[in-house]
Amino acid sequence: MDYKDLLETYEKEHNHPLKPVNIRNAENHAPGHSVCYTCGAPSKYLYYNDGIRRSQLKCKVCNSVSQVHRRYLSVTKYLCPHCGHALFLWKERKDCSIYKCDNDNCSVYTSNKKNLNFGERLLQSVKSSQFKLHYQYREYHFTNEQLIHASPKPYSNITNIRNSLNTLALILTFHVSFAISARKTAYLLREVFKIRLSYQSVLNYCEMAAYHCHKFNLAYKGDVDNIQAGDETYIKINGEHNFTFFFISAKNLKISAYHIDTTRDTLPAAIAIKEAIRTASPNLKTFIITDGNPSYQNAIHFLNKSLDDKLKLKNVIGLQNLDAISTRFRPFKQLIERLNRTYKFHMRAATGFSSRNGAVSLTTLFVTFYNFLRPHMSLDYKVPVPLGFLNGFDTLQGRWAALIQTAIAI
Image (cartoon, rainbow, N blue to C red):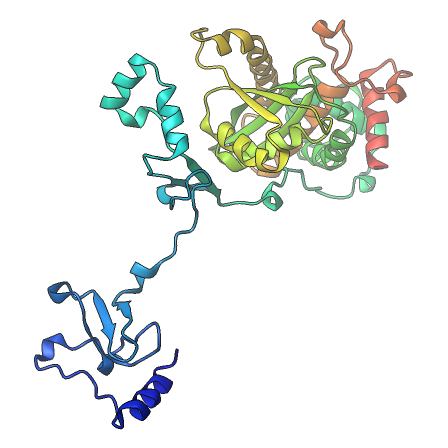
């Protein structure tokens, strides 16, 4: 409706125009900027309709009611899918906003409340915050397009190095496989093989190789198991804590995902889990074994939206088996803990990193060595991911050289 048309209609029916509201007390005038949200009539046709509260205006032209402040007209963002009740913003976090249904007659609330035993009912009456009985919805502040895996950047083109492929293979053998520092690696090359290189050249060569090894790791990872264990461990970059996320397959013991980030929040956890299940069979239901870090639970919740709940999270809490889940899945959690210790051993020689790219590069080369070149006693001294084109080489540096040649061709 348009108030001008309504005024013309009123004048035709009553043979005189509609007069504005006659307010004797100036304090009772409607705010000058207010208008009727139904017909658009200006403030001179509006008057307060709720006494001293003065939050509601009534229009003399169309007899409709409007609110003085628009916040009263806000529409709820989400509705409960079980009862249709409006959800309210319960918690605001960096990675997501949590909305909650406060309807005590909601089917979710009544069903969860009935499932409580006697002891839980007593605790719920005293500390209701210990139980999540109402329906909740999480609105995440990131999308699938932001799940970008950490990858090393090339220092330069690897074909521009002034030494042979065998020299590069020796550098990777000493610095990565045997966890010798860059300075000692340069010293070994100079004193044993008469190859004069600075320790900075050793680091530069490793960054060049890591760029191609990262693509090799993703391309040759292969299928993954239905049980994967994950955890994060910290490293130092520029004197500050950063975190390396790892996931390992339970059967063939290969690293299925690795990612470095500055936090342990939901986003890096989702990036690692997404990469861990990237090569899984389409209909495979995967069990993710982690500790009690809530970031993993939030990441599973986010990823299951597009995976039809194919991911199941099992938390192994603490150092003792105090529940059935910890007792059953403790051996898988120990796999990732042993992997973290092995990773720490190979990172210790670096004594921290001065750049993020250096940390990502050495981590990438460690994963390449762990998956394709390092024999495991539990696998009858075989590598987690056997490669046929490496069978004809009887030295570690020879296998490194063949692997780098294949990685460059990808």
